[in-house]
Image (cartoon, rainbow, N blue to C red; front, top):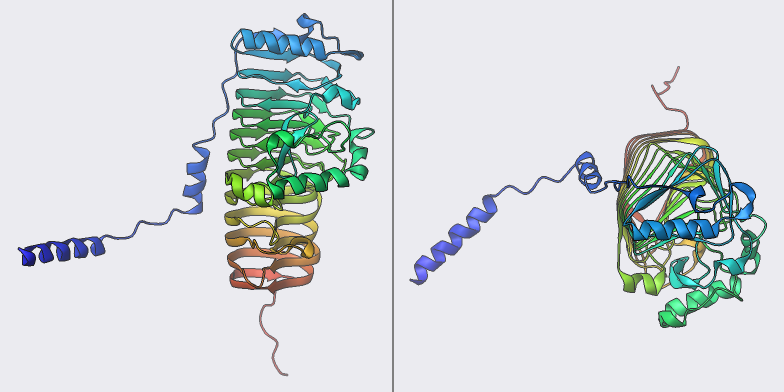
Amino acid sequence: MKRCLFLLVVLFYCSSCSRSPEKALSREEKLENVLKNIVPPKISDNILLITDFGAVGDSLHDNKPAFDKAIQACKEQNGGKIVVPAGIYILNGPIHLTSNLCIDLQKGAKLVFGANPADYLPAVLTSWEGTFLYNYSPLIYGYQLENIAITGDGVIDGNGRDNFSKWAENQKESQLLSRKMNKENTPLKDRIFGEGHFLRPQLIQFFECKNVLIEGVTIKNSPFWCVHILKSENVTARKVKFDAFNRNNDGFDPEYSKNVLIEDIDFNNADDNVAIKAGRDHEGRRTAITSENIVIRNCRFKGLHGVVIGSEMSAGVQNVFVENCSFGGYCKRGIYLKSNPDRGGFIRDIYVNNVTFGEVEDCFFITSYYHGEGKGFETDISNVFVDNVRCRRATNAGVVIQGYPSKKVRDIHFSNVKIDSAATGVSLSHAENIVFNDVIIGEEVKVPSHAK
């Protein structure tokens, strides 16, 4: 009997060994699998004209009551499409969305938000630089919703330049308090900011939302981040245009979010075009919701940085695809991955394919020691694949990789990269298995010279 059992075990083991290992998916196959799970919401056929609810686009009247009434009507009717015709619509307070709602800004329509901070109270649950807290309401706010859309050829103007934007000079005390609460795990109910504090609200925030579309609109003059995609999934952003030059005017900030498509965007931002995040420090590691399956394609970058991952990314970021993008103007850095030893988490499985930049300071930059600070929670950065990237000029460096002594950046692959000129071609420290295949920085060296 024992001999028979032994024989069966041996046969099973040999059978298992003979199976061929599963073939690893290619970048194209991985991308296709991600895109299958991103489907824009169906927009309701129930049309509501905002002017039927008392809205007047004369740049004088307060249209918040009209929007509140129209949104309530959509809620009672289980969905609707609020059409905003041409005109300038002042809103002295935020728009709070509801499920199964589309706001369609027709050509010539412009929403301009009022400048009185008190109009954005009471405080709502939100997040600020990777820490959950109660603060002034984002100007357009969706919380725990499904099937929502903002579409059309109109403009959303945060009117932040002369009010909220100036708060950046006074935010330090509240900023440090939020970080202290993060580190000490202060109960969420006690993290009350708003009045008496200077944390600027986001222009648009989708918080714990599913099935979201933002398409066509122009976004400008935001108080803080422009579009914050927070703990949300199945989000499509398409053909959006940015004209946002205030401090911290990031374009899109996906955080703790998955299945996000950002495509055909014209960026023009004073800060990051796309900044992928996943919470800050202790709270990010406790929340442990990875930002993943994010596709950025067919975009035109212009502003501070093209695509950034971090620095608040403590829950981890993975499966990011930057595809077929070019530039609409200057970027300080093209692709920028940044963390420090306070963050922890990981950045992995990042794919950059067929991307072109003009003049930058640095074309490709990875650092595990952002701002030269932090300890105890090093970030694991690995498996980054850069293929077919072109850059005309890097005034500082072509490729920079800065790992950390106890956690090296590893397994970074460059193929078919051409940078016409760079003050420094390559700078690597605390990095291992960095692979270059057909990489030229500066003039291509061809046939070697010979003695005459």
